[in-house]
Length: 458
Image (tube, rainbow, N blue to C red; front, side):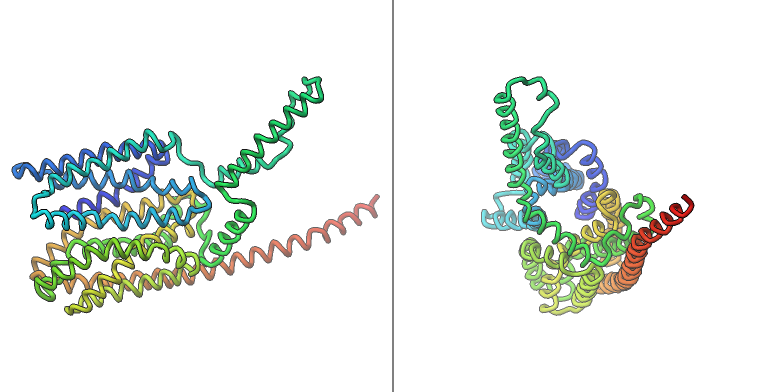
C-alpha cells in the first residue's frame, strides 16, 4: 500500500503539475517542489524516530508529489541548449532511472555502519536536496523559463534582417557621418546577437541538418501527423488514444507490481535465499539498466517506425511475462535484465507516440490524461497483492500469466491498428498530394483558355 500510494501519486499528479507548469512556469513548480519535498522528508524522519506516530504513507505521498513538481519541468532545460536537446533529454531521463540507486546506496551505508545510520537520519539529511534546489532557483536559474527553439528562430530571423539597421528616425539626423556611425553600431549589435544565437541554435548548416533529420524522423515514424490539429477531446475519442491508454494501464500495472513484489515472488517460486539474491541484483540493475539503455532508446525511436517499435515492446513484455512465470534462477535473472531495459524504453516510446500521433499542441493534456488514468487504475495493485497472498496462497504465477496474456492481446490489437491505420493515412496523404499537383497543373491551362475567351469577346 505504501508503494502503491507513492506510484499513483507520481502518475496522477502529472496532469495538474503540467497544467501549473503551462500557466505559471517552471520556477513556481520548483518552489512548490522544495516546500513539498522538505515537508515529506521531515515527516518521514519524524515517523521513523517516533514509532507511535504513523505518518509514513502521508510522507511518501508528499515525496512523490514533490518529485513530480521537480521532474516534469526539468525537461525544459533542453531549451537552453537546442543544439544538444536530445542529449539533455537523455541525461534527464537517465537521471530519473538512476534515482533508484539512492536507496541502494543508503542500504549499503546502513549495513556498513552496523545499522547506526538509521532511516530518520537519512531522511533528515535528505532535506539538503530541496535546500540545494531552492538555492539554485534563486541564484543560478533564470527568473523566466527558457525560450523554445521556435521562439529563438523568430529572433534569429530578425537578427539576420539588415533592414532593421535603418530606422524612421534617421531622417532627423542631418550629419551623414553621424548617420553612418549610428547605423554601424546598430549593425554590430545585430551581428553580435546573431553570433550569440548561432552559438545556441547552431550555424546555418547545423540548423539545416537538424531540420533534415526531423523530416526523416517524421517520415520514418509512419504515423506522423495523424491527429495533429484536432482538439484534445476529439483525439481522446479515437482508437489511437484508447488503445495506447489500455496498453499503458496494463504495462504500468505490471511494472509497478513487479517492482513492489520481486523479492516475495522469488521467495515463493525458489526460496528465501535466492529471492534475496535476485532482489539484490534487481536493486543494482534497475538504475544501471536505465542509464545504459537511455542513449540507445533515442536511436531506436528515430530509426524505427512506430508500429515496429510497438511490436518490439509487445514481444518483450510477453517474453518477460513468460519468464517471470517459470520458477528457475536463470529465468529470474533474465526477467530482471529484460525488465530494467524495457521500463525506460516503454516510457520513452509512449511519449514519442503521443508526440507523433497527437502533436505538441495537445501533448500535455493527452499525455497527462494517459498517465493520470493509468495511475488511478494502479490502485488495483493493492487488490492484486491481496489476491496473491489470499486465494492464490502467495503464488504470483497466476497474476503474472494474466498480466502477460492481457498485455499481449491489447498490444497485438494496438500494433495491428497502428500499422493498418498508418498505411491508410499515408495512402490518403499521397492521394491528396497528387490531387494538389494535378490541380496546380490544370490551373494555368484553364486560365489561358479563359483569357482566350475573354479576348475573343473583346
